[in-house]
Length: 298
Image (cartoon, one colour):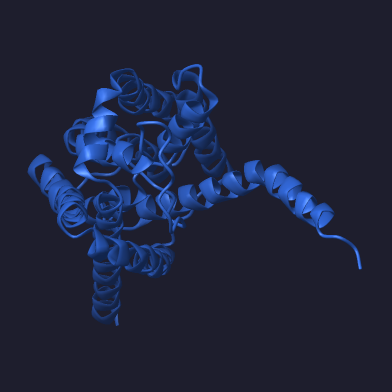
């Protein structure tokens, strides 16, 4: 019976790993399909914004994560998850099906593209902190980089190449990959929850609170560093709060197979979505009221 249980767990883990890898590759392909080489160059020319974006995502957010995991008595899985999420910038809303409109010369997909590329360099550095606060990781620095390159950089470049050479095909693939990545994320989440349940991992209320503080803090950092213009502040707050969940899940699944860290990242997504709905609710209510007043009564 023990052998059967171990085989079943291995099958579940392999399933969650495969689904996570497919989700990461599909979502990064979606990002690459949403930006052109010209838009990347335009974004790079906005040096002030790019510099503020890098400072927010590569310095301020990891510092916030380090403070949270040091001050709060969190579980080891939650500590590693927060540090890992802090190390993987370039995230997008997993529920989003459309690329955000460009603001001036700044395209959100271009910023995500740049941050995701930088994450390949930053993530192995953060592994030093993860080793000190969490369980041992079955992932060397070389494999860290290999996972990032294959699951992140290659799909980004493929999507960029398709957009540059075949924009019509890119438009079709954008819609397909948006739906497919959402389906893959839901399937991967189910598999991760099942794996974690078999290992009897769980997070406490303080862990969930830390996730909420991390989301709010990252968004506030982006808003404060975003500059004087409100649209740019909103853009940077959104990009900074949205960590690269796909890459985080991939590293957690490969490096810490017991599933607790991956489960903590799933909880982060749930908290992130809940906070987004909470903050967007007043605006949605105002829009609904405006529509109701605009419709003449019979």
